Amino acid sequence: MSDIITAAVAALNTKIEDGFAAGTAKFVIEGEGSIVIDVDGARASDDAADVTLTADVDTFQGMLDGSVNPTAAFMGGSLSVDGDMGMAMQLGAALA
Image (cartoon, rainbow, N blue to C red; front, side):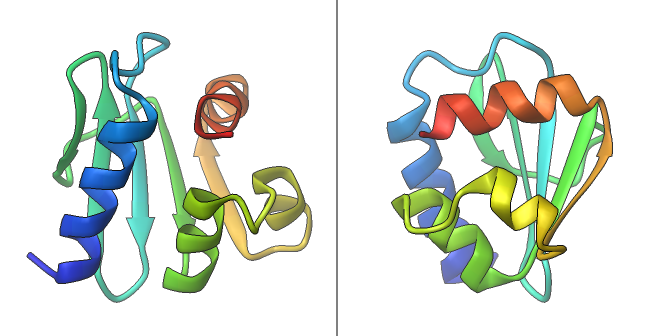
């Protein structure tokens, strides 16, 4: 597992302390791997999910540290969403 995925899992578990009860979401970080977030928290995994968000490392790290707005990243094309858009919006709010 890459250092970026390991650090991202830790950061996500800090941000979403009680897990993500809305369903299962997956972040695919291009060139690094994937993270699944659900009611149990975040973990490195490529399991199926209700929504999959794909971004490069810089975009993903920016969303985690608050310097990149997820909606703006989506509108600008640096974040793609496949699946339940409503759940993606809930996840974006949970990460804020």
